[in-house]
Amino acid sequence: MRLLKIEATKLIPYRAFWVFFALHVIFLLLITASIGKLEQFAIPGETYFFSFPEVWFHLTLVASYLHLLPGILFIMLVCNEFTFRTFRQNVIDGLGRHEAVLAKFLAAAGYAFVFTLLLFLYGFIRALMGGHFSGFGNAFEKAHYLPLFYLQMCGSLSLAIFLAFLIKKSALSIIIFLSYSLIVERLLKWQLPDHVEQYLPVHVFNQLVAPPANPLEQMMELNEKVMPPEITVLLALGYIAVFILVSLLVVQRSDL
Image (cartoon, rainbow, N blue to C red; front, top):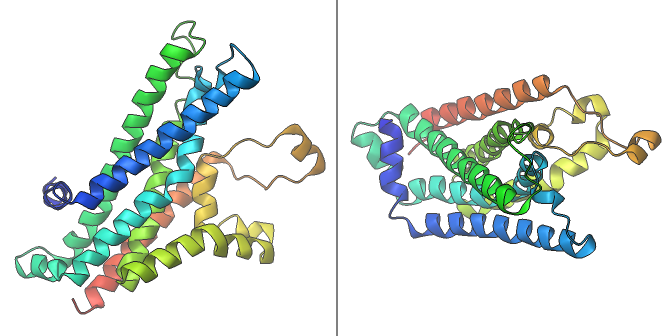
């Protein structure tokens, strides 16, 4: 809690934090509202997107495409610590290097928790207002996607924070983060065999909230091999642990 309080004192007055958070929420609302409107236009009277229990999968799937935005935010937060020497000052003031590193990962976990909670409230309210609500019998049948989404966001933010600690330059860290997430790993998947590419970090995080293969893909065997959910969760936790440990090693050995 002490580390979270320290990070909160930095984030609350930081205008860029609120700008990125607002954009994150606004993009989610705009995209999901647009999908709902298109659905009503295509099939008048139908609101399947916001209906229980499918709403939990639909919202987490859409939100999973927005992780890059908070990733950029946390890269800026970490790199600013090095640019303005606040990281060094915190260590001089008595904060251990490992505590300064863990504080950033805890802040990311807190951000992911708040956003997941907002996602739950938004989905619950929209499903009550616009979905085919027929009782709470199966309303939370697919709510397990929410904790999976939380883990997915923690993984994506952990990757961003790790790169920031490794590179220490905002612009370069952001470029590498976006390039790897959007391009590099996709290229690697073309070069690597299936039994290797499915273990790449972004692929693992994406599989936490992934749409099921449709019958045509299954028939043509075009869909990617999907690991059991339990293995995917363990791998995601493993990658997060690796990012934290390597970040700790980098900071312990670097000149602040």
